[in-house]
Structure formats: C-alpha cells, structure tokens
Image 1 (cartoon, each protein chain N blue to C red):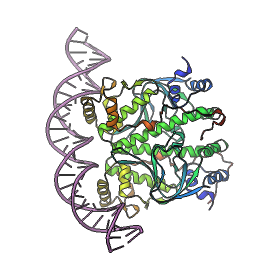
Image 2 (cartoon, rainbow over the protein chains, first blue to last red; image 1 turned 180 degrees about the horizontal axis):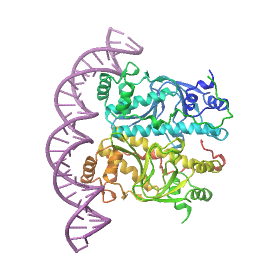
Image 3 (cartoon, helix red, strand yellow; image 1 turned 135 degrees about the vertical axis):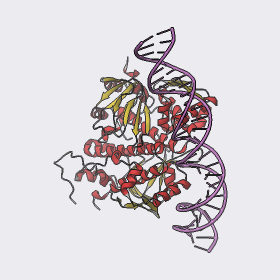
Image 4 (cartoon, rainbow over the protein chains, first blue to last red; image 1 turned 90 degrees about the vertical axis):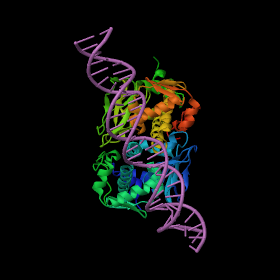
Length: 253
Length: 253
DNA sequence: CGCTTTGTTGAACGGGTTCAATTCGCGTGG
DNA sequence: CCACGCGAATTGAACCCGTTCAACAAAGCG
C-alpha cells in the first residue's frame, strides 16, 4: 500500500499534485488507525477537547439533536474527509459524530498538522482547500433546505455525494454504494422518513435514479442534474489542477 | 481611537485577552478602509480571486441565487466579521456578498494575515477561533432550516444576532438596531415574505419580541429563548476567556 | 425462527405558499 | 406643502407540499 492510495491523498490530488515528500507526510498522519463499529459515537455534543480524525474507510455523519427530539444531520463524511477538525479550535464539540457503517479512522493531533504547515506550505494549502470545500458543502446544503423542494433537495444531495465519492474513486456517473437508510437521508434533508420514501419512489418512477438496497444508480444523470439544479462549482473540483512547483516530480500511474 | 476599539478586536477579546502588540497588528489590517453604499455587491458568485475584508461598520449578507429565481441568504455579517475569507482558499467565490446598509470595510491580503500567524500564534488562534465560530453559525442555521418551524427559526436567528452584536457592543438583552427588511429575513430563513410578516406579528402579539422600524426589542427574553430552543453554546462566547500560556502558545494545542 | 429495524402505502391534517389587494412610509419633484 | 411614486409592510383566501398517524410488509439478525 503506497501513500498515494490513502483516500485523503487521492482527494487532495484533485486540487494539486503532491510530491513524494508531501505524500509521506500525509501517510504519517494515518499511523494511529482506529476501528469503530457502526452506530458508535466518535464525538458527542459538548465534549471537551475532542480528538480529530481522518476517515479512511466507511461513512460517518455529523448531527445535532433538538430539544423536541428531532435531529438534523449536518453532513455525511466519506473516506478522505476530516472529522471533528473544527471542534479543535472551538472549546468544545458543537455536534455529534456517529459512524454510519463500520469505519477506519486515524487519530491525529491538530498541533502536529499545523506543525507541518510551515515546512510543507503546498500541503497546507491543499488541506486548507479541503477544509474550505467542506464548508462550501454545508453552505450549499443550507441553500437546499431553504429554497429547494424535497425532490430537488434529494437529487442534489445524492449528486453531491457522487462527485465527492468520485474524487476518492468510489463512484462513477453510473452510481455508487450508499449505506444510508431512508431515515438518515430524511434527517439530512429536513424531511420526514415517510415523505423521503415517497420522494425516492417518485425519482425511481420518473426514471431519474434508483436508491435501493445499498446502492444509488443514476438512470438519467443529465436530467437529474437539471432537476436538482446541481452545479458542482461549489465543490471546486475543477479538472485543472494547481501547478505550484514544476520541479517536483508527480507520481506516475 | 485606540486599536482596542475596532469591532474585530472587541470580538476577539471575548475569546482571549490580547496584548498591545497583538492589538496593533490587528489595527494594521484596518489600514485600507473602503466605503460601499447600501445594495452594492462586494463579491459576486464565481468571481475569481475575490478580495477579503474585515467589516467595521454596517451590515452585509452572503447569499446564493437559484435557477428558479429564489435566493437564499447564508448568513448576515456584522461589524468585526470577516468577509470572503473562505473564497480565498477556494479558487473562486461560491456566493455573493452584498451590503445591506452603507458599510465600511477594510481590504487585506490573506497572505499577510497568514504571515502574522507565525509571529503571533495567540492572535492566530483567536482569529481561527472566530472563523470556526462563523462556521458553527452556518451549521446551526442549517439545523434551523431543517428542523425548526417558522416561529422558532425566526426567534433563533434574532437571538443569535443579539449575542453576536453584543460581543461587539451593539446590542443588549433589551434589543438592538436591525436594518433588515422582512424580505431579507425571509430569504435567510427559507420563508416567504408573506409568512415572515405573519410570524413577526405572532411573536409581537404573544409578547415575545417586536421587530419594527429598524429595531428588535425583546419583550420577554427568557420565554423567547425557550420558544427558539436557543442555546448559545455553539457560538462559544462563554464568559470564561482562554488564558493561553505564552510559553507554549501553538496553534493546535 | 421471532424480533427489531427499515421500508412502504393510505388518509387526514396543517404549516407555509401563492395570488391578490390594500396600506404604510418616505423620498422626490412640482 | 402637497401629490406622486415606489418599495416595504400587511392582510385575506385558496391551495399544496410535506407531516402525522396508522397499519403492514420486508429485510436483516441473533
């Protein structure tokens, strides 16, 4: 297993090509692997000084619980995503993080991450880009909840996940494996589970996409993009990479 | 006018006490003041390499426009807030920024900001804290749009603004000056302007709060907090400040 | 196997939208 | 000083998207 193969390295490479040195620094952050079973809470709300992780396998969700009993999933995390990084700067965690599937995650100390920023400024830029991209995702979700109807909202989320998964090699325009239940999807989209079911049925019956038995299949990708009003610009996954230092050789295939 | 008096310095001081040196560094970022008239676009969506600002006077909003014509305001910014900082790391702006009132804002180069981080790690921490806090705000707004009804959502936003304004000396538990129109409020809360009006009337008639002629007045603060399910923990404005030992001052700690 | 979680469907209800009309506030020009 | 114009605020009524309640089927799992 080369350092190139970690999902985080793969994701960052959509932003800029990384050198051998940078890749090995990145690999070093994967030293302390931990496994968590499906349903485990990695971080609970209000927890002090929670640790940060890099997710390398499986899916995770961040959510908040309301007094009235409802819950809102803020975002799903997939391999290559950071977990709980924001909580490091605030004095306590402001949301829960739960494993959606069995997962592998690497604990790391934020101090160490910041420490490498001085020596590896290109890597720093790439990581800050990834973090900014995560923020853009939350922002776009907010737009969905505020101004898109249930069908567009659903299509938008599942298309976004396609783009994100594709950047770590886990999806194609045909579809991807999706471990989410309709309840979790509903909690992310601000819908009731009942209506979630009806929306998914509608998308299926209209020949747009199929969400069933752990798989998302796009039956008419382009039409779905139109229905969702999906413009992946906010993810900043443009084909053109940042060329920063031509002296550094890129890793060949 | 001492450096202490800039809204940003005031805001950061709720996190940690800053030294004279740190305060003057902060003041240096306010050198290039610009004025923008109400309604001006500081940044438009898709703009390349947009500048970053520190808002020192007036209100601003960040929003996205949808294909169907609707718009969603992601957040309002008040004195002491950063504008367009995220867009610096992504390759282009992913939302518009518009002046809600006439404003004063200071342009600065993100490079210079990062440059000071090495020499003033405590200041760096404070600024990263402020940025994280902004993210937490967007996240909590998302929760509102997903799982709170119109009344709670409205109360929650107006209470949040009270807390934020209070940290820069522009509000008390009695109320504050609020230049927002009902249309802008509606666009931030994912509601129609018509319903926004009815919700505000209800809040007024129930003796909870009054939104009228540019002022927000809290008629029953505690009850309103309960109705909104408002817990300001996510803002991390706890009364206790961080005392950071200067000897071990590092970013990640 | 039985039990629990997830998915599915029907019917009634309700919060919020939409359409439409009227009023208010206020700056501007006659 | 008043008339006008225009955006913001306000109110009514009909409609609809999504919720809620309720029941049952299907699928995993010990």
